[in-house]
Length: 165
Image (cartoon, rainbow, N blue to C red; front, side):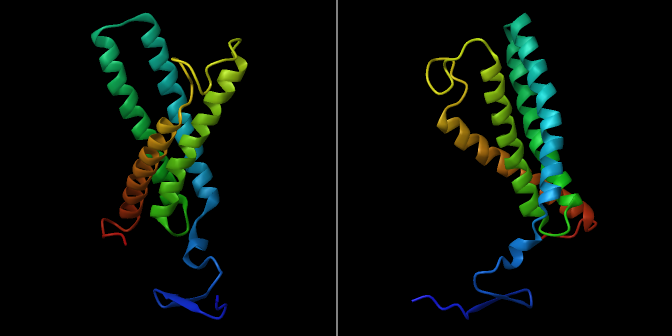
């Protein structure tokens, strides 16, 4: 039996069961802006990485992989930071969602690139597949983590270095 009259108290505010409560502090416009900025950073980083990979190899390829990772992690962090700074509340949640939205947006762009190419195979299968489920899961977790870190940085900067929580 479910009781609809139960209320939850959080930081002195009372929310009726079934309402969003503190989740209503998530600012989707800020999440969108953060994700968009993250995509603006990821796109050139991956294009430059692909150009370098095509033209050189060896040690430069290893350096390329490191720079690519730093660029992608930085994009998720900047997305989280932007969402936290622009949001009206819940900076950590806004940052986390912005990082994840950046990743999802990049996956959509990758699929669109795959569709535009003349080779319509290897989206989910084959040695050069564009998408595999374990990579999607790990990518979402990493994006969420760095988006959360960006949200934490943004919240701390907003509060002048005071602990967030």
